[in-house]
Each structure stands twice: as structure tokens, then as C-alpha cells.
Length: 265
Image (cartoon, one colour):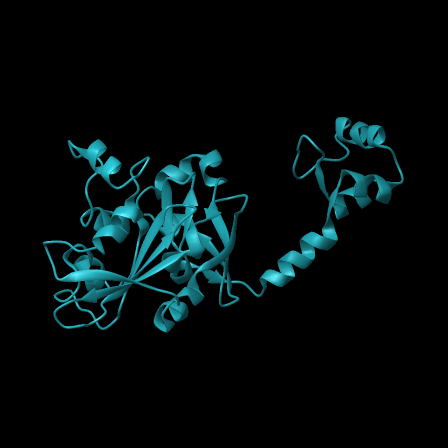
């Protein structure tokens, strides 16, 4: 991860921090809560007005792109050659220009540590997520909260209706960069903050869930050992609808221990 202070060259103030995930090529801007809608960078003023200081990745990327040479520039090939770049790279151009832009007084300075206010805010970021059988997500957060979030209660977020109408898309849910969002097929995002606020706390910890999986989910070899049978016998039980794997895979299936035990009763 690369970390940059956003600095006002006239006042020396630090209105925010820019985070960059090198592997995923994702930008996230974290704004200082001392900002108001008038002092915040123009692109972010609407978020600050609503009390949102963690900027979604698409808007963070839009802010970055305001500060670098656009990929569609007519002489971009010559510029890339001059910078000894094989391909267009947003972070490289951002570092070359120090994020300076003619529209404001801001610039970027690389730092080594995430500021404390960002670390504190990240306590509400996600550490894990999985979809339920209906329209909810079970979300694990960095502060050890576990919450069930009914996506039907978030109708105003862009793309939610599409997710709810497409089961395959819904089940593609995974945690995005540093837990800042849940993403569906890497195309539709829900900010962690929105999930945290809308979620219903569950009397469960991530360790409880991991312990359940460790003790109650068995692979094919473990299932055969428990039932004292061969793989062929196990396949026969499945073919007779006496047993159903919870997940099928080319190298073996996964089963619930209680389902396996039930075949012996």
C-alpha cells in the first residue's frame, strides 16, 4: 500500500490522506473531519455535507484523474516513451506531478504510516463477508462486531436492486481493498460504513464462526473417515439424495458434519 498526505501548500494544512492499493489499483481518500463543505476539495464537498469523510473508490479515482495526464491525450504515446513507461499508469503520473493541479493548492507527500485518525476509522472496515440464503449479508468488522445487513433496507444505494435480482451477482460478494467496501463482481460497491450503520448486531464473533467451520465442515476424505466408507459409497449416498454437499468442487466436496451423521441414524 502507498500512503500520501494531501497538503495545502498555502496553509500547510492536511485536509486528508490518499491510500493506494498497488495490487488492486484502488484509490481511497480519507478526509479530515475538521473540513466542512466549503473547505473540502470541490469534488468531495457533497460527501462532507452529508458527514461522509471516507470517499468511495470511484470518486477517489475521479479526483486522482483530475490531477494527472489523461490516458486519452493525443500525444500520450510520446509522453509514455519520455517517462520510460511501457503502459499508462495512474499512480506513476500522480507521483511524478506530486498530485498538483491548477484548480487548487493541494499536493501529495508520500508517508510511511497511516495517520491515527484513519486507523481509528478503519475499525469499522470489513474483515469478512458472506451472503445468506436470502437477501442479507453477514459482515465481520475490524472492531469484532458481526452484523446481519438486509440489503433490501439499502434501496437508495446505486446497484442494490440489480444485486438483489441476480443471485449469481449477489453471491459474488467479497471484501474490497482494506475492507473499505463489499464489491459484487468488482463492479458494484457498498461502503463498509453503510453496512456498519444499517446492520443488526449478532451475538457472534468471527472466531465463533471460524470455530464452527473448523469443527463442522468436512472435506471428502474427512467425510469418508467419519462414515467409515469409501468415496464410491459417499457418492452413492449423494446419488440417492440421502446426503447433499454444501459445496462441490473438482478436487472434492464439502459437507456439514451433522448431515453426515444423520445418514447413520
